[in-house]
Length: 160
Image 1 (tube, rainbow, N blue to C red):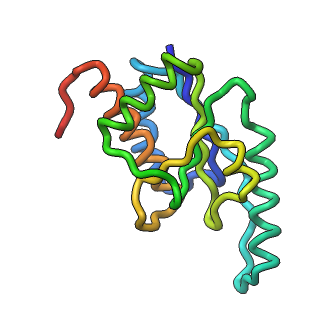
Image 2: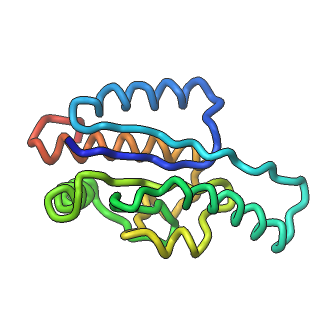
């Protein structure tokens, strides 16, 4: 069974997001082994400058890098990544599972995003939308798209 790891910055605080994550985690248990690695986010001061932004991103991304497994296919969620249809995302997951390995790690950065160091170690970068969303909400988007991808791959009915 495919193992999917989600390395993300920050802890979920909102009950509605926790509920959605819980529901999709339950649905996905039929298709994959799923786990979350939550990285402690750095506190953002009221006033940011370029040096502070770089420092905070470096700290968060150093923690991310320490949690990436060498044998896992790493996909960063990044605004400059490639946009895929749900069908193409499903094919991508199937291709990785067949041709690379049975472990995929998705990386979701914090409020300030990811450093070049993290983006360089990624096998791939994808973007769900050119619009900006809170990184906590992207977790729900990712799980929904994973669930949809598995349903597509198995030719199972899902809301189209």
